[in-house]
Amino acid sequence: MTVSQTVVSIGHGFLEGPRWRDGRLYASDFFARTVLTFDGDGVRDVVCEVPGQPSGLGWSPDGVLHVVSMLDRRLLRLENGELTELADLSGLFPWHANDLIVDGSGRSYVGNFGWDEGTVDTIAATVIARVDPDGSVSTAATDLVFPNGMAITPDGATFLVAETFAARVTAFTIGDDGSLSDRRVWADFADGATFPTLTEAMASGAVLPDGIALHADGTLWVADAARQGVLRVAQGGEVLQRIGFGTRTAFAVAVGGPAADTLYACVAAPYRSANPSLDWQASLVRVDLDPVMADDAVWAGR
Image 1 (cartoon, helix red, strand yellow):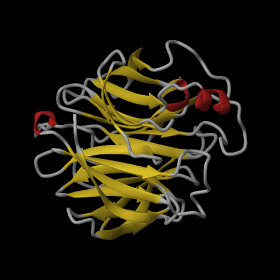
Image 2 (cartoon, helix red, strand yellow):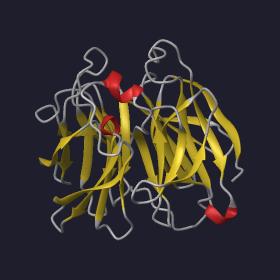
Image 3 (cartoon, rainbow, N blue to C red):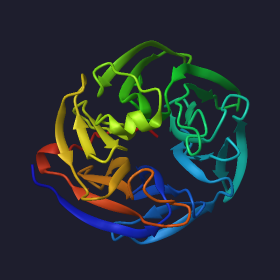
Image 4 (tube, rainbow, N blue to C red):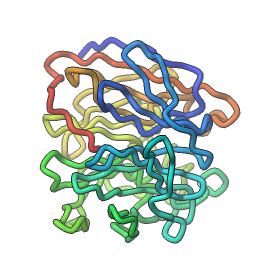
């Protein structure tokens, strides 16, 4: 299937957490330490500055922006132009906080790296934290390998999370109280193989799912940190469509546009090939989807 691509914005450190809301794309730039918006022509505006390095973004039901502050492992709220702490996650997270999703009741689910992957090759499992609207923190799920991109199905019943260096997407059932249960594999890209180290995971040839976004037909857009572009994946792991970005790697993805007919990909130099804190090569790419792929009921979470 042929799709057209347009580079919307260039010269970023590392873009993460893209979300479409109110006619604009929101995204965090790690190393510029800013949350940005982009209009249809790629004009960017700064929403806020996050000294602790922003990552995952989401909104409470009353429209307040939630922002993950990575380095100090906090969840922040942006209200009336001011960032305040909603929760301190450092008691649960051994290393950087990462992606975020907010459910329809205002509960935030936050992932984290799990270990210092920049200096330690051995993979370590970690947890997902749940932050309730009152700021109380609990462990939502355990024994996850680099829990990264997250999505919630439109009925609010199923929680999906990309376990990047386990090469799988894992599903949970969401309880009325926000608890996650009935853990199962939604897609396994490594045929059950496990990887003790990052080096082995990167050399495996398996899809390493990073950011994800649900499409209305129940398939999942997956940004592959192992350099294979963005994939549209069915439950069970069948790859239905692949969108490449040449020598660039897609690390995060969102569906948006006025008619929900646009895929946005945050792309950068391949993992471990450059130092994005110093060499700003990241860009935002817009992909115009084939009309048969577009649907105005796309859901990617808040």
